Image 1 (tube, rainbow, N blue to C red):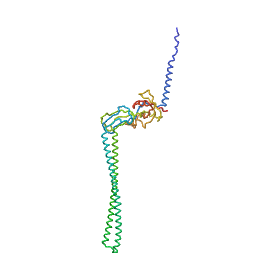
Image 2 (cartoon, rainbow, N blue to C red):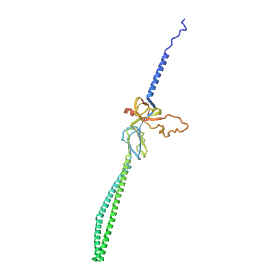
Image 3 (spheres, rainbow, N blue to C red):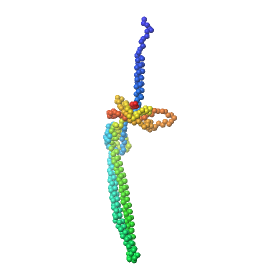
Length: 348
């Protein structure tokens, strides 16, 4: 009979398994620790883009729509045309008013020339001639005054010479007043030119404004990208302020990631970023930290939290970080604003 006290050899499988698990766990933990020391990750991130909402700036009926929803368009393409007949009439009215203001300017300048000519005539003819007559009458009066003292002329002759002298002086005074009146007419004509010039400027502004309003009847794409959210149909009456569509720019796609404030110690502009999009998990997308927000997301909310209360509970805040995507056109075109992504910033 075999010895019942003989012991079976111990199995070495379990210790080996435990050793493998311990080593694997240690490697995994060390790897994660090293990774965490040099990276900051967050899945609170999404694709964003420059979206240009197009809003009607004038009222009118829609004559033509030259794009379909989610169609790719180029910057400067005409996408919508409104009925602009009433706006063209306003432009023509403004042009007519401007032409009339120009004609008034010409007439006012002609009035200035006429008033200036009258002033020169008064100066050269009336005043100069009146001064000569006064001078001659004064000389004659002085001679007759001496002759009267010598009894060489009669009192009647002296009185006649005195009357002539006074008449000449009165004529000079009248000529001086006429010169002042002519000068006033010149100033008035100049002021009229200034008034008409102001009116001309106003008419030019009215014309520019009418042309600007007319240009709003042709709605063009502000950027190259996808035209989406079409909210208008042919024949529809739109008012100023009506949203028509939006253009998502091709060149304005970026990542907006919200990092915890405790993750920002070593984060700075220019650090490399690894991006993983939920929709394209097989694509390795690279990026660069572009900008850090000036405040936390909570501070920019409609109702910022007020912690000046007795029930304060500390909450770790998040700061938006803008990440520039470094990818080819195909990848950029595949990304859509609003898509969820995971980002990892290499901080060291």
